[in-house]
Each structure stands twice: as structure tokens, then as C-alpha cells.
Image 1 (tube, rainbow, N blue to C red):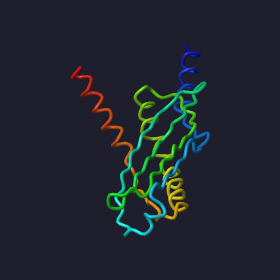
Image 2 (image 1 turned 90 degrees about the vertical axis):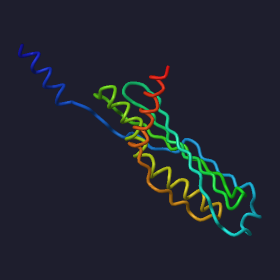
Image 3 (image 1 turned 45 degrees about the vertical axis):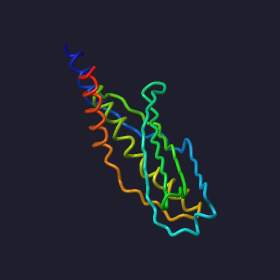
Image 4 (image 1 turned 120 degrees about the horizontal axis):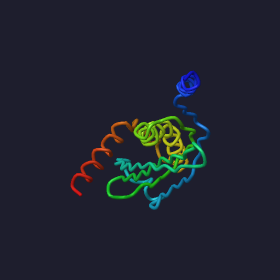
Length: 158
């Protein structure tokens, strides 16, 4: 009985573990299809942002999370530029139940990656001679909750 109690205490001491192992750019692209003509137009940008996340289990308790930001900027009807970054990270995550693991991979990790992706896009865009994007922060918790609701609604209809 004492052995069982000490094993339970050891597991409680270990608890959940989260550690960022590496952050890196997995893919990066930039296209300005109408340059140099686009530079002569009045700059009145409209920005369309698409974001996506995906996760992949690696060996052991390691997980790769990839946040993809795709931006299309138009001035008037002309495409000024298209930029995309896949910002990735490797995370050590263990000791979480399924719901907590899903939330960590779907919201917490992308929240960590977003500032890096945003900076990579800003740097890329300014190298193309356009003003920095200065993307607003994203509420990944709200997006995660919306995705869960969408999945639950789909399951109820099926």
C-alpha cells in the first residue's frame, strides 16, 4: 500500500510537462505579380488573411505544430503581393488528458508561433518594397472553440 501511495505521489509531482524544443520556418514564399507597375498605383491596400494549423506526432512525446499564414494584399482590383509563411515548432508535451492535449496543440502552440510568423511576414513584405503588414493579434482560443463547435455540429447532423 505504501508503494502504491509513493507511486501516485511521484506521478503527481511529475504532472504535465510542456517544453518548447525548436522554432523554425518550414516554408516561406513571396510573389509580387504586378511589380513594378503596382508601385505607381495609389496605395489603398485590402488585406485577406488565411491561417491554418496542423499537428504531427513525432517520436515519444514530441509534437510538431505548423502555423500557416497566407496573405493576399490588393490595391484596388490589382494584387499587390501574396506572401505565405509556415512557422513550425517542436514541442515536448506529456502528462495531459486528451482534451487538454487537443487544446494545447490547437490553440496554445499556435499562439506561441504567431509572433514569429508575423515577424517573418513583415520582413518578407518589406524586402519586397511594401509597407509592413503589422497583423493584429489572433485569438487562437476563440478559433479553437469555434472549430470544436463546428465539429460537434457536423457530428450531430451526421
